[in-house]
Structure formats: structure tokens, C-alpha cells
Length: 496
Image 1 (tube, rainbow, N blue to C red):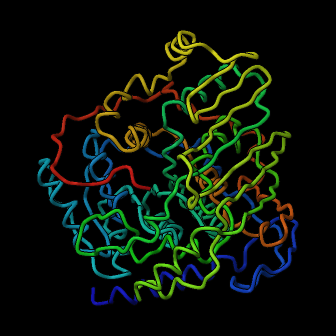
Image 2: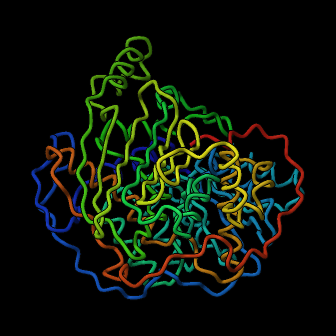
């Protein structure tokens, strides 16, 4: 509890510094990347025998899910609110480095009539005490990226299921750690990829599962979101949330890594449509980044006006746009883009191209079943006929609760419902690490003139026989949505 914030940030920076060392990539020995990144030793294929197949695994049901949350900034405090609306959830513990963040969520619980949670704050190791609490079933992680893998692994070792904000891992070694730990402990490790629960993504998934698009040939996903102002915003530790990144951690990520650092929002829904890890798998990728035309200039300008930004000046930042292309084992292709520093409208692309149909989400939701776009009345008929049961069940309440238009609430409700009914989670550990590992693999490719890089098979061949999960509420759906009064907290639920 006495460790200083400065020591915590130094530890986090040290953890991130080794992000690319010892990476394990099948069949590649690329050159070492640029000198400001750790030297990469020739990689070899990971030798791993699947101990237990977590795909399709349903753990023993939990009538009441006792939750401990680590990280209570914008994302974590929003999760506290959303979980308060779900039957069978007890929020037992709240943890954050900042006392203000813990106290803010504690006030929310009090205002909504929930019991007081145990508080953990002030120390960079205090999260372990939270995880070690015996009366917890689920650890909900919303911390900076460098902590995700170690927290998730430790929680599973302590007998807890884990759900974790994106990305689940930053390195290939971390990916294998979580796969091995989940298989050994038989504890769920789910990445909280909320975009898989957005309304149009769920519609196209249901349509693909029913064959409306024919054979899926190609997909596109992206995270195009101008975050320059947020990345350079000074955090205020005296506030519960302030729309900034604690310790400037996200800016540090972009100042030390060049690739697609945030692939999962656009990639996750496409992978579910293509049944990646359940009938197909990502085989290899190639990646290319533009130069940086924005963040370096912004850092230098700010440093000339404010000494706070001196350490961020005269550094080489990741390129504005990264484009990564993946080939799957069945011959499909996926394009993934990442741009958080250009002036352009928000987009995740979400393009689905099949032999019989086509769908795209941005700039407007459009579907073609044949050669022509469906007209407005035809789109309404599609929504009426193919809206998944999960949206019919909780969609309207999700819009009221909020969180990226409701998809965050659908994600949390579905996850809790699966745990309470002993059902497999929609995203297992193999999904989380496969989607996340695109980041270090793209870094490797970018550093080696877009050399193709093999994607490890974290299922160890089980993808050939694994079957798709039923997200459309074929089973489950028993958990009720509670009528909980809104607390008067100014929490930004939509900041990512």
C-alpha cells in the first residue's frame, strides 16, 4: 500500500519493454526490428500438446456470480454500472491504483442499494490480494494492457474465471501462457470483445450462420478512431474518471510499437462469421504501416509549450495507418486496419463478402443479397426475420443501460448468463489470444518489410473438429435484467 505511483508506472513500463522478446512464431526467423525495440531472437514453433480443449467447455454453473473488478477508470466503472443491472451478480471487490476510482464505484453501489464491496487501492501489487479473496468466482480486468496477461493467469491459478478488456495479450509468449493456464485450471479466460455484440454484427453473424451470404470469401475489420487528443491528455488522479489514460500508458504504447496494436474490435466479429478456430483458422499474415504524420509533430509541439511532454518529444511513433492482411487455412482473406491519429470518421469497417451476398456497416449499414443493395423496406424485412434472439431478449434494455450503444451490456449479460447456466462462453481463450496476437505479429512483419508471418495455432489442431458456439440463445437466456435506479455519476461509458 506504500508503493508510490511512480514505482508502479516504472514497473509497468519495464513490463512493456520486453513485449517483443522471446516471441514464438511458427516457421519464421525474421531480422531484428528497429533498434528502439528489443532484439528478436529467431523464433520457433511452440511445442504444445493440448491438455484440455476449452472450446465448447461449460464450467459448473454458478447461480450467483461473485465478481471482483480490477481497474476502475472509464471502462471499469462502466462495467460496475452494467453488472448492477444483471440478476445473480454480486460485486464483492473493487480494485484500482487510485483511491478516487475505487471510492467512485463504491458510491455507485451505495446509491443503487448494493452491498459495500471490499476496497483495494494504492499499491501496484494490491490486485493480487483482491484476486486471492476466497469468495470470488470471476475477475473482471480493465487495466492498462501490460497487466492483462499476468493478472489473468494469476486469477486462473487462484481458481477464478477471468474476463479481460481488449487486447487480451501483447506478446506471443503471453498468449501461450494463458492457453496453458486455462487448459490446466479449466477456468474460462474470455476477452471482452464488445463489438461482437453490436446489433449489426450480430445480425450478419446470424445471416451467415443461416447461409444467406453463401460461402464467406473475404472480410474486413478496423479500428479507425482519432484518439490524438485523448492520447496526449494529462490524467487527473484526483478524479474517478477524466477521459485520460493513467500514466499516459496508451501514448507510451504508440511511441514504442509499430503495427496494428488494437486489432480485435474489427477482427472479432469477422472471425466469428468465418468460424475461426472452429472449422477454419488464421494461417499467416503480412502487415505494412505508413509513416507517422501526426503524433510525433503533436508531441514536439506540446513539449515546446509544456515540460510535462518533454519525454514524449523527438520519438518515433507508430505510423498513422497500419494495414494487415490475413490468409486462412481454407483460403479466405481478412483485411484489418488500425488508425488512431488521422482526421477521419470513426469506422470498424465490418465488411462481409460471400458468394451470395455482401454486407458493410460503415458509413451506413447496407446489405446486398445478389448484385444490388437492399432497399429500405427490404432491409427492414431482413432485420425482422434475422434479428438474433439475444437482441430481442435484451436489446432494448441494453440501449437504455448504454455502453457503446448497448453492446457492452449485451456482452456482460450474455457472459453472466452463460456462467450461471454452465454454458460455454462465446469467446474462449483461443479466440482471445488469436485475435490479440495479430498485434505482435504485425509488428514483426512491419519491421521486416512486410514479410509474411505465420499465425500460431493455439488450438493445436482442434480447430478442425471444434464447432461454432450458439450465440443466438439456443440455450440459456434465463438471467433477468434488474430494475436498478441510475446513479448520478458522470461516468463516460463509451470511452475505449
